[in-house]
Image 1 (spheres, helix red, strand yellow):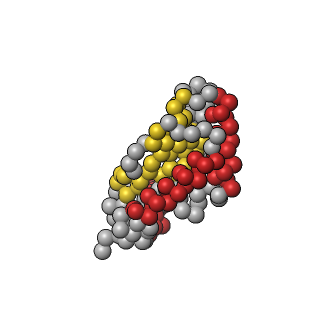
Image 2: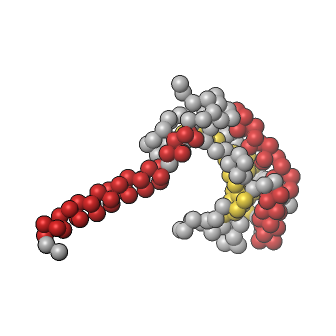
Image 3: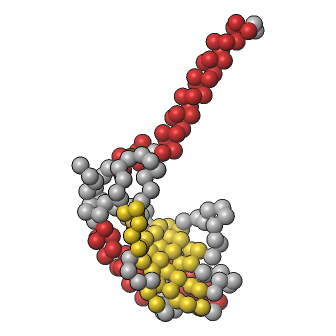
Length: 175
């Protein structure tokens, strides 16, 4: 193949590669995600009530009792990955159990998994490089995430956190 014949082929390959990169980027950022971000949600106050309800239910099933609450809700701005409307919030709250011996800690982790699985939650796999002493469960119906942290033998403190998905504070995206 001569160099004059290769030039159009190289241009077509380059154009195809550029198109492929653009399509992958759009899919990674999520054109569908942009649509999701523009939909109405529950309000931030409703999310807080939902979290408190989950916390109450989980605490009733655990063999250990908290030493303290993490206090007020922790609200934070959601990352919109630089696309779509900004202004959504995520909220969460939890409890600390202090230094729990290995036996009750293992039982708490088992009860946590069993109870939330019965409520429709699914395990969230730990990402590479993340802490192995987390048990994370997510409800696919409402995207609430519950985390029991400190379940390994080497951890000293056990804590429970429940967080909401990203919601519009008043339930509706800005006009």
